Length: 478
Image 1: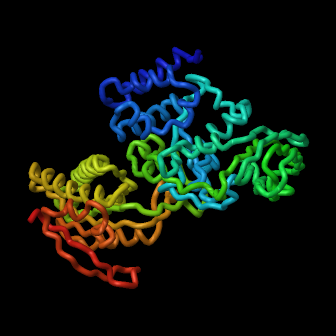
Image 2 (image 1 turned 180 degrees about the vertical axis):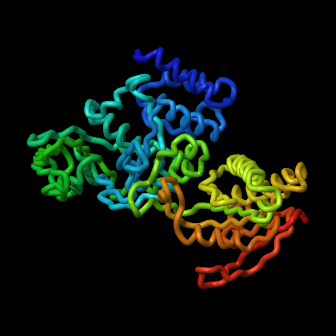
Image 3 (image 1 turned 120 degrees about the vertical axis):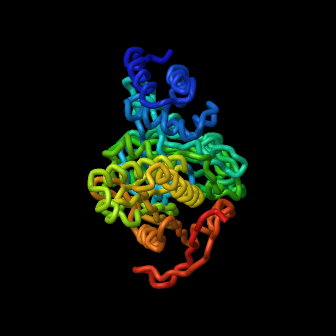
């Protein structure tokens, strides 16, 4: 039976209950999971899958785990997932330790991770609440270490089966190899090939089974270290094969051998079940509010393949300060920031920063950004009706594309030409206007969302951009 620190759990759950207003029974569902789930079910919880399994709102489930992590109920972990074999290449407790360049030792591939797809955020129960076997990975069996601790179940083959389950089914031998020791794996080889690899070493083997060779017991001695195997390839007969694996490295690692079917020499193409990506987390306002100390270390940043960026500015703000005074104008601008943030969060976005009277926000999808822009304009119009002598005049621009997530001024930010163009597109807007780029206008759901509005195509020469850029001015409802 699971050992739980009842007092500690009760304190944290009480704090979680009061952190914000939750849907009925939401926290109790989390408590039930902490108490009754298996150890493996409390390792690297995917909040999106948790929401599906427990019939919860997805956004609220993400917020739930972020608040739970901030309170110490769970530990938040950033993991790098191999897009080819779905293994967990590496994991980090803090964003500042994450590196985009990585290597999958199973696939022998050098990779560059992007926040969109290879970087996932998961949550493991804190050991002070409930200790599970996976808190001590060095004590795990080789099977639990490879197939659960070092694998992501989200990677699926075309028929929807988790690829890790396929690897388990094909596994014919798996063991730890201690430094300076020899481990023997005895396998009955069938047609196809035997493929060996490790999570913690580049050692790998591929032995082709030749049906023309006479059957008989075969013994193969292989030297393995952290970088290679000798020999690493060969041809064998079907039947009993004894691999003598001698570890000449200075640390132990697991080594497993799979039986590949005839004609198969690489993993099938994988697709991934939904998970909380780095891109989505960075566009989640709750993360930015609760984890302000999370930063990206170094100068190279982390790539984002596609992000929607929205910029706003106030027209005539200098005149506003002159007309109503600094204190009144400052208070008014802060109220306008609050309203823009509320709209941003409603549309799956986050405020990246404010610059004077301007806002920069990021969104998962261009359609969300455009709907947010429309709602921002409506929200400020309603705000102005209540105080016509202090009217705020909003100008908005939206663009999308690749960017680099970086830390600037101790804050998570975005950098690159997409950011520059988004700011320039906003600069085209006049009073109560929204401008969107062609890339945004062509994105899924955007044209439908603008069907009720007067949309005027234009071209613009933006500073720092060589070619004219097609843009669209979004006026009032048609």
